[in-house]
Image 1 (tube, rainbow, N blue to C red):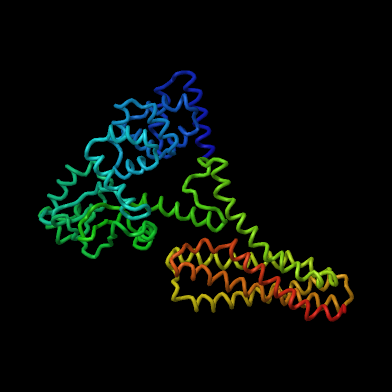
Image 2 (cartoon, helix red, strand yellow):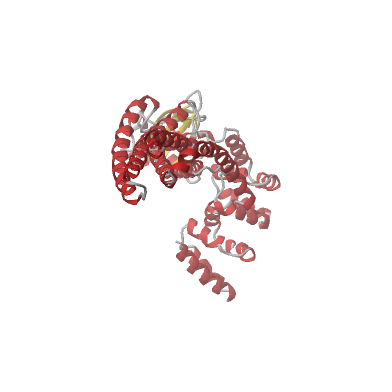
Length: 457
């Protein structure tokens, strides 16, 4: 895609210099809106508006929705009132609400001034719902059908009113706004003209409440293979629908947020190119300071074992390996469990099953690593054979226990955190690594003081 957009950008740049605007327009109208948005984002500010104005009105609105907020703001500032009104007329209400959320106050005032009264009402209605709720990502532009219609009448209604709806693949049968069932366009087209739609509709439908968590709503799309989900209020009245494109956006945002948390970064909610250096610094430094302070525990443990380390210097050489192996083992377990929790594959009630499985895995991994480590330590240690053998035993035994502890904490802590209502992603690699590091060092030096020290006096 990057090569594709760069090549086209270069072609468009050459055509702009030659003022061959019709040729540019003929190229752009053959592309999909997301591809056009990528091309426009590569253009300098003085060319962006000229290129955007070459697009037909409907295509321009679709491209505008795909662009990053800073470029949208740049375009809005360059639009005439008529151009802004035309773009808003072609946008769906949920996209307009998202636009309003992203823009500064002065731009929002101008948007609302140019939007028609119906769109303003819809925007205000959508913005009143809590962030990350089904209501905040739904659209109010859906196709509803009265329960009294026949198949032919329903098709006529869709032809008349479906042009501005976000989707007509699935329609919703209502009685005084109360949702009774769903019906697909395929069912209507294949049915006889006089067939009542109540005989065709599916009454066993999936719906969500306006206040349901948007991530849980997005998961329903994958679970039931849906293209849209109706959103109802407390009285089962249909107030909107969530479409699959919005669900995909939620899944991407949540995945990004989880990855940032697992990497000890405060989620920003912004793409990387839009983050300033200071914003990135603010997102990262608190966690780095926390981990630096927590590492003090390992420093204290090592300092307390100075006597042991002075007598058997070889022990210090294995500390990084033990800490790294423990951290990696914990990360493997925690990432797997966090992912399964987010997908709904496991719940807190499964914790004993999870622990039993992870401990068996830990035992297999730990024994394998301990055997390899024992052989390596025996060969590399230059101490007298008796001491070298005991050092190898100490390191291998610690490694086995460390892997078991790491797997245990890696699988249990995310589930416990989820149980108390917090995000399990915060218990990923950094936190678990800190805990395992401290415990592995304590065990290491306890074993060493028992097994190795007596041999060296």
